[in-house]
Length: 144
Image (cartoon, rainbow, N blue to C red; front, side, top):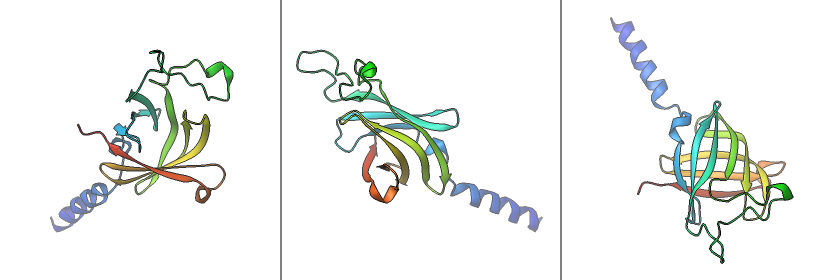
């Protein structure tokens, strides 16, 4: 009986500290709080798309487009609903890595890494080449 209790305790102890994709899935405000990105599971990895914008329309009242995209064929896409992040795979601890981050504010795509700092704080790091040469930003879980 004692061995069974030890096995059960170890099982719950191990899984109570492990992260899963479900820990990140949901709605997150970007650092500027001018957009909400909804993170979802996509074939075992995490992706995210813009589902709310503080100012979704341009000065003419038309939906904002992806005008800075280096691919001219993609510049007519609406920014609202745009998939900004793809391919983030759980690595270990509280880290998801090897993803791609697209920034429609400058039209650039970066390799990305996410670190869940606590249940409502997500650090994203975008970089080209080596992660120590990148830039980090903090997203906050939308709880309102």
